[in-house]
Length: 305
Image 1 (cartoon, rainbow, N blue to C red):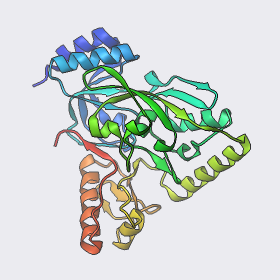
Image 2: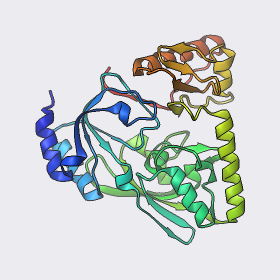
Image 3: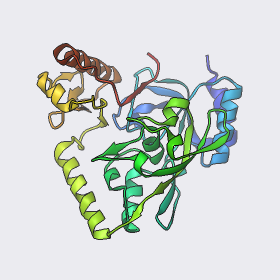
Image 4: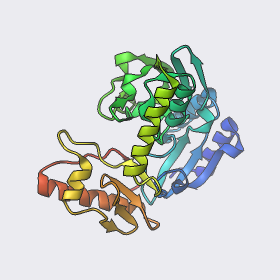
């Protein structure tokens, strides 16, 4: 059993009292607005304190999970045992040099796309409207509208799970379908250099506005969700598979298959994580039974079962 007060006291000595929370409800930190308490949530303010936190937790055998904006997470109702390390506004600095943007992991990828627009740099238009952080986008090779992070990520500095700082470049990112070296080997993204191209501000803005319009028309942005629940299976569209199973608007508890886009699950009435997880399983079973297709989740489901 984790001595929460003792570990929290040690962490406060590293990051400051206001940056450590005990029994913090994870529903306050996820876009789905679900999730029980994390034993401890810590918000390091720089790389040095992050490294000290990681090494301290490792030395004491305390498990930890690193998160950004919480837009791709379902945290179970019993919460998370151990420590959650949150990187967001505390890791959001950036610089622009020529056609390269270097940005820290906690900055929203949609903000980076707008920075690119301001500097007349093209290549990141697809990220307009993606709700996660740059670190999360690198970790899962986020993409939309025929663009992916693998197209623009040149170099990433990261911290391995022992607290040591390393870097990868180009193919070393091991980008794949919604995956990267982060998921394959583990690590905490610290910052990434994005190689873009000079372009027309007007053309970049027009394309971003078009992507924004499409998202608004086709996605349930007005309700709590975690975006696309499932990875797109080869040769199929997830939303159509779910719709053809007659599941549009199907509900378990407070979780519902979106009527606007059947590839989304939305929290319509104070859903529990259990409602969402049960609805995911119901969808997977229905699609498997009718079409013989295995739907793999794109969202991460974490926490105590």
